[in-house]
Image (cartoon, rainbow, N blue to C red):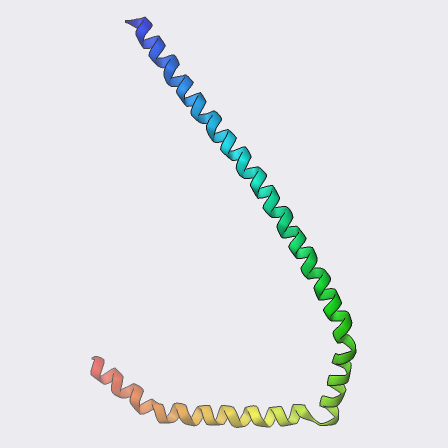
Length: 109
């Protein structure tokens, strides 16, 4: 009887070791794929950095011209007045909608 128990224990341990080996093989495979994905991601980041450098180099002269034109034509003041007006209009709309909000709160109670 003890021999049967020993054989059974050995088989159980062998099955666990075999399953552990399969898991380690999957882990190795996953690491290999992850390494490839990391390399692809690094290549993509490098390409984005290169494109950003090119864009910055090309846009620098344009930025100076655009900023100069904006200062010359006082666009900041125009934009400021337009945004002030827009915020005022939004405030007026919110005031007009306030009674609807109160009415909906009363109906839900």
